[in-house]
Structures are given as structure tokens and as C-alpha cells.
Length: 155
Image (cartoon, rainbow, N blue to C red; front, side, top):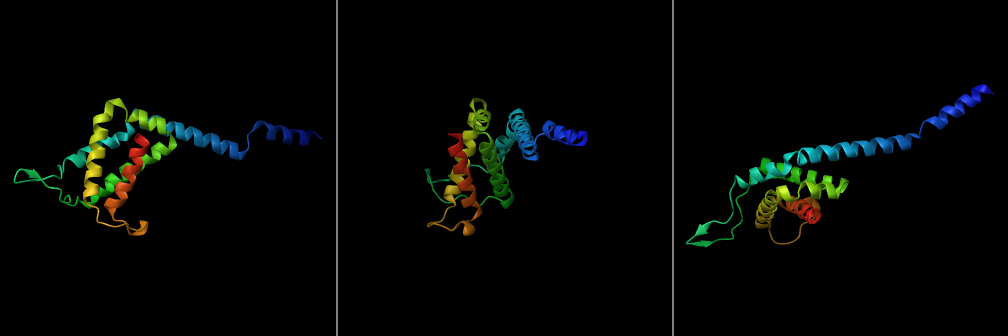
């Protein structure tokens, strides 16, 4: 009889594996969000703004009037990095939207504005008419979609 009571006592002390997994997941989420806040979202916005603005604006002066020609294609590495950066920001928003909004708040507002303007301007200028199926979308279209999702989270 004493062997059985020892078994039931040990079962009462520990939580179920599902409870332990949930607690671990919540702790991990808190740690990640704290790290993102402490590092200003790992500097993702600053990096994106730096690489996007180094390429310059897309409007070119021709006879004193701006033209609305498609922007020259950015190097594939820049598009890929921008896409992944925006996806990371969207993932953070899904984890904790107020944390993302606070991190992108007043101190980085100009950087965020420039990031959105440059991404939307570039991707919008590179769009070709008509709708595409998701598996046929080009990189600029995918980046545009992720940027619009992030804009929705930000606002």
C-alpha cells in the first residue's frame, strides 16, 4: 500500500507534460519579445531603411517633370533580405501586436515611414497588370503583400 501512495504523490507534484510545454512556450515567447524590445526589433527596421534608401528614389527627372516609370530592379539579395525582414516583423506582430507597435512607436516613426514608403513605392512600380496566383507571384509581389500586412499591423 505504501508503494501506491508514493506513486500518486509524485503524480500530484508535477504538472502534466502539456502544462509544462505550455509554460515553456510562454516563457520562450516572453524572452523573445523582451529581446526584440531591448534590441529595437534586432535593428531590422534600421537595416531595411539603410539598404532601401541607398538605392535612391525611383522618380527620375526628365525635362523637369518626374516620371512614373518602373523602378530599376533591386538586386535579388536586397529583395530577399527585405522580404525576410518584413516577415519577421509580421511574425512578431502575431506574437504580441502591442509589443511591435510600441517598438515601432515614436522614436522610430521616421524610419518606419521611410521603410513603408520605399517598399510600397518600389513594389508598386514593379507590378504588372492583372492578378497572379500565389504560386506564380514574383518576389516584388510577395514583398508587397507582406509589407501591406505589416502596415495593417502597424496602424
